[in-house]
Length: 542
Image (cartoon, rainbow, N blue to C red; front, side, top):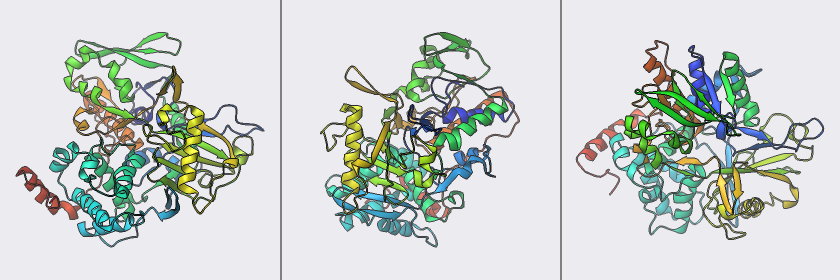
């Protein structure tokens, strides 16, 4: 297993439980972008270091594969394993520049049934709080989303995949509020995708799943629209997972980055891994899973491998972007309501989460020097738009400038009429260590795959034409179709199943849960499939 992120650990989990001998080679940290970490040197008096992370994470109710894995990871006192550490989020704060923020329930009011008309009306109600948004434009947005719900698979892959979110929502000529909030903010905040680049099919897929989870009508999505962990991620999930896998026999070899794959006689015959000191080792196995991020995988695909499976060359066409977190540790609790925070229309597409109130235990007694009582974890999803303090993009800023700029945007978007955030309450802050500076350039060790227009054709399956080479990672084709923990887990399951198939192993396959498709939309989708094959537009696309 080359890579110990969520995809690699998920594949290892499925294979070790089916009797395979598994060795994981990981260059840095197990858990990948999902991990949390202690901020070095911040603990005193026997406490733990202050908790830092790549960025806060949440577990939408439409996730099915990952929670299943989590239920199979033991955790003391939890009958359903580490899944018992997930807590439901019931509200979110929407912030607007210079306006009082709004607290909203994240789950729409229960409705008795789902029809295209009710979906459209529910969306109009859900987004009616946005200021200065013309009602006619909100109704148009809801109509376009209803068109997605009733589009056939053929149209989704044949038309929506090749249009941007901006094009589908016909942003040209619309109000600034429409472009800022419905076109841009929704994509930047939820999936770190630029609306003028991102595939409308990808945005529609996750949007539909979130809407269905919020209705409360879908048994498979009974967990609601949103959950978070009740502790730092490694405490709640990653560390127990690694301990379980190690106890089952998985071998972890750290400080080992894969740098080459050897292809001879139609098979992979070995891999080269290199430690941080530059010492190289050749490793051999029956099966190889490349479970690294796409930007780390592409350099391994040498000409011989690409000649054996030319389709793998498409991975070099995939695009990554930046979505990175910063944590502010505060000496006074804010009065921001519990739940997610979205600074809608903020230049850096800022979202945040108050963590301490939703974590078990007393934060100040458990972490740091005892003075920090709150952790406000913030994600920055747009690193290419100038900010409000320095007029520079995040990529152009120093570490200190990033911290000051993010705080300034939070104040502008959340403090009107509230006074929730006070700079004198900042004890310290922590930026994801994957961000570094050298020679006047900012680097990101952990970029995020974004689904650009037409990119689905370039994404690999878990298996390929080389019979003992497999792929895991959020760039692999999955049902969720998004760079998420759920996508990585599903890809790991698919890679494990592909090995079982290649080995002719009769063991039960890892279950891969599809996204829910409601029968009530089947007739409309069939009609649309007929229209698409006849070269006609969707009936709502007039």
